[in-house]
Length: 300
Length: 134
Image 1 (cartoon, each protein chain N blue to C red):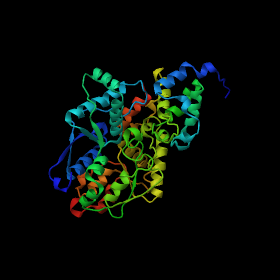
Image 2: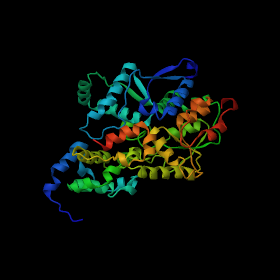
Image 3: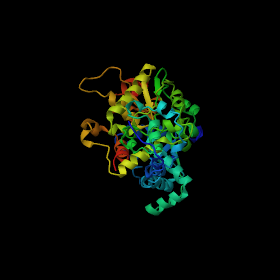
Image 4: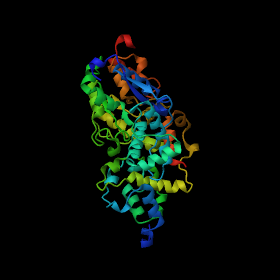
C-alpha cells in the first residue's frame, strides 16, 4: 500500500471483540477512522463471537481453544488475515493459531467438535503491525497533518501484546520499540520509563482490585516522574486498569492525573480527524483538553 | 514450617498432575530465582514464584494453600527471562487448575466494589471468571 494506492482502500478483515463493541468503543471508533484515512478499511467479520479473553495455559484444556478457533474459522471465510486492535484478542487469537499450527491433531479434534473445518491458514495481525510493515513509519509521518510537536507521550506496552515472544513475535518483549516509533512518527516525543513493559495486574482487577490498583499507581507515577503528559496503550484492559484508579472520587482529584489513551486516538489527532473520531469521551481522565492543543480550531 | 521429604512424595500423583497439566518438567528449574526477582506482583505474594516451584518439585501439596498461585497475573515476564526455559505461568495455571477442579472458586462477587463492577471492561469479566472460577 503506497501513496498511489490512496483512495483505493485495502480491505482488512477485522475482529473487534467484546470490549471494543461495548466499554472500549472509543478504541474501535478511532481505530477504524485512522485505518480508513490511511487507506485500510477494517471490515468487521460478518459473524463473530467472543474469543474467551484468556489463552488456556493448561495443556489438557482444549475447551478454551474452541471459542478462538471459531473466530479463526470465521476469519478464514473472510480472507487470509484478520486484524485485531484489542491486545488480548490479538494475544488469544495468535497463540491459538500458533498452537493449532504446531499441533494438527489438536486442530482436528477441535474441528471435529465445532463441526467447522478450520484450515489453519489465517494470519493474525495487530493494527500496529500493519502500520509498521505495510505502511511504514516514514509514510505515516508524511500523512500527519498536525504533528504532535512537544507532546511527551509514554508508550505503555503491558504484557500480552508482546509475550510470549516465540508465539507472538510482534516486537522485542523486553525492549520493544513499536509504540515508540509510532509516537515519533506522529511528531511527539516518546518518554522512556522503567514500567513500560510491567504488568498492570490484568484480570486481577476482578479478584484483588487493590493489588492491581497498586501496580497501576506505580506505573502511572513512574511515567509522571519521567515527564510524560499522556500514557499510550494498545490494550483496553491496560487502559482501564491505569485510568480507573485515577478517577474522580468523593475526595475529588489529586491534580496530577495523566490521561491514558489508545495509540489510535493519538493518531486521530495527528491525522487531523474531527474530535468525534477520537472516541475520547467517557474516559476517567479526560484526554481532550490536552489533545485539543494540537487540533485545529475548526475541528473541535 | 516442619515438613518431611520422601521419595514417595517426589514421585507422587500430585507431582505427576502438575507436570501433566502444565506440560512442564518441574526438575528443569534450578532455583536461580530470576522469576522472583522480576515478578511485578511478588510484593503481594506469600511465597515467591521460585519457592512455589521448589515446593511443587518436592511434592508439597501445601503449596496449593499459597496465595501466590492466585496473585500470579500470567503476565509472562518470568517465562521471558527464565534461563532454563521453564514456563512458570503454565505451572501456576496447573496449580490453580488442581484447586479449581476440586471445587475451589476464587472470586467472591459479593466483595467486589459495586462501582467497579459497573465499570469493568467486558474482557476483564470474561477472562477473570475463566481464570478464577470453574
